[in-house]
Length: 389
Image (cartoon, rainbow, N blue to C red):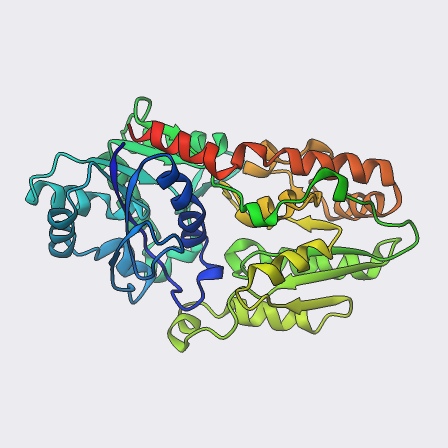
């Protein structure tokens, strides 16, 4: 089995529960090690499994430093010390620098890039748009070009879903790259602590309030303003009583991060002021998080353009919560067609039916749970190891 050097950028080491990349690594590490991998995690914070070797790395001062200043000297030294067979770049834009470090260290290791985050999306007409969250002072295009350079530097390119594979392939082709022999689909693992048995699933009682949970980041570029409008209509116009729980994943952020983007604070305040909406936190405790999910009846997907996957959606589905979602991107690939909507009015109708039709609700609760079966960490680890072999 290979010796894997897993390079993980963590933007919030003091709030690991809000960092999907770290959660992914923490869930995947035990399964990889159980299947024989010798795993070295190089990151600002270690994973929970003590069998994983750990190399501490600095926290990038900004999201742009993580992409443009990965530190070739430090990477070359790390590669010399660890002598990996495989290097996994979880920041694809850093792959050219990692390739240069491999060259300096005279390492023959395979370089795999995992596309946790896509710095672009496509419009309905197929126009590539840079991610607005990466476009401060016009940096969106340079970030996209750095991502394309990263794809070119990788021996393997790993993505979460069929939708992501299509988007990355299309974008790569426009940059003059052919990924056909290098692209692999490896989904994110589900958290087995957030999985219910089928016999635990129950439908809301007709006539009683129905509770929805929104457990996504509150950035504007996640489509949160559209969710705010939907929340207002659900709590005021639905023909059933709807209560909404909104997860505050960040809490108090640093002044530097707020200066770059204050939309989470602004939108959190708007939601907290709305009747029928509770803004809650789990304090980073997965037991509390499970309790909050178990106390809800359905989940809501974000309105984020170009979403290649959503761990929070999978969390809800593993708990048997039907998730309603915009008819777009990965949601249209993964979520049952009967739970997709194109207009706010359709979203209201879906919630009303979940509240009043127990058979419909239970059928979709079971489908939601079943849709996560292939995301068991052991199955994902096997696909991961096959992809980097």
